[in-house]
Image (cartoon, rainbow, N blue to C red; front, side, top):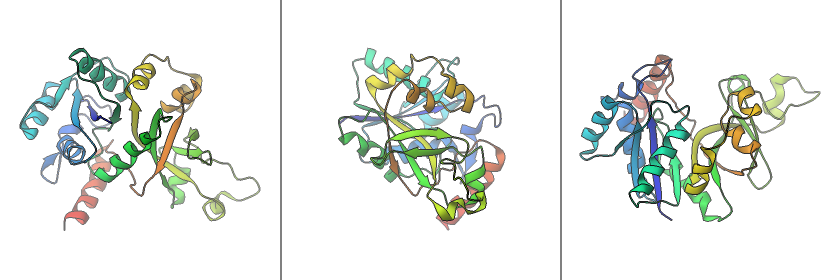
Length: 255
């Protein structure tokens, strides 16, 4: 099962411009993400998909060879950027069975989490896979910035929401974590190549536009999403404040 990790990275972030090149532990964030992916045993190739030559030059220099792929600046999502890379590689006669979309702002992701995600595709029926982590803090449960997921008994996603799901009737919200199990969605995805290209052709859906969660477009179109469990908390860097938190975690890991 040939697997590629594609890392979408753009310079023009609204909340944190230039964040792929910001230093964490003395190295650019994008380099950390690339190295984590490159250290994953089940991965055959790792590429960085970007629309900015500064990011491309940075990661090619760090890798010691060309790993960047220049992509359109018009893409609305990392999924679309990954799709362009897959099409370009296929035009060169290079194809992969599984494509992992690893965001370029996840410098603390672990190779074992990528391996957990890819292992889902041992089941030939799996089209898309992602990760979840059990929620332990009420602040994560109620925060609209934390996407939640509920699944079937065989770990297939039923729905994703920014609201706490399921709603627990007749129980005060402060007691919900004591009365049931809730899961945070960790936004790392993997796809069968054919499925990824199909998803890139889908128009936005009503549920997606309501919750601003891209994966709802796929569910609404009838695709199935396998969900594997992890203890990785997902430390995405969207703002300078997130970088401070990542620096604290980085220091605790490396001291």
